[in-house]
Length: 283
Image (cartoon, rainbow, N blue to C red; front, side, top):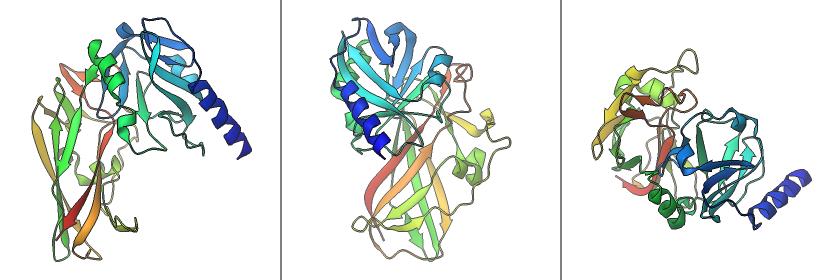
């Protein structure tokens, strides 16, 4: 524990330093610098920064720091932490070991703070938009789960807010078992006690081999288009009518996709996931 505290203090000290970068550097991870022309885009729905090519040197990074810079001034800074670390920084994090994506995509997460606007702050959004790098990805909405006897259904709607055609995992094509492999699925949580009232019980089916994928699992959605998906559950215990926090992870592919795979023609495979979380009345 003492070592983790020391590591945490060192990281925080680094994040608050006055280090400056050249005015044309907009992103740096440890001593590796990137200019706007090195970056393909940033997806604000998943907080993934896409580089124009793979960078094998990123695979050797286990800890450290990263930052976005506007004319040399930091607009977002965070730490690099291995997934097994027990240190929970309050600043944004890029997780290493294991990397969830190949070395052309870096996901920025918020481990110690659920306020995602800390990552997508106005200064960062202005910087990325000015360089033509800001993409909006997917938005997810839903209606309250419907219960009839021991059956429950949940309908979720995915909207493409991006300017590109996005290829998304389609449960009608994967089957709900394979789709469930990529997602934590549906949870109903008592908002007062934070206890789980229902946890997704669809058995998952793993792909073979584990890192395989297929374009046959994907559906393209046009910019501005929405698609709705319904998931059906058999209940062993029927939740009482009431107010619950409804949580559902809509997944995309991740480590399976290389930089060469990312675009299928003019369509982009959407990577990462979006968590739907909202308090709803279930009748």
